[in-house]
Image 1 (cartoon, helix red, strand yellow):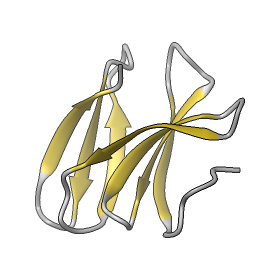
Image 2 (cartoon, one colour):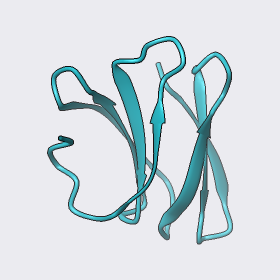
Image 3 (cartoon, one colour):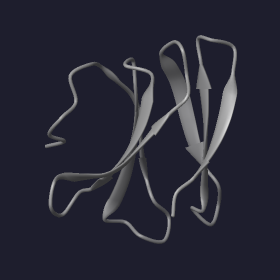
Length: 79
């Protein structure tokens, strides 16, 4: 369970080299990194003005790219 989410999850990604880390995108305009073992929030990324439609991790897991209804793609570091 991901404690702290209030809105719909639009995508859920598992980190390719750290499978205990899960990244969610949400209709609340945020990306969040979670420690799935502990069920706690590790990091929150903000920047979108509208809901995030989708997100994708780079092969190494060092970056995540998000695309939102605000017609913007943002790149965030995962470390």
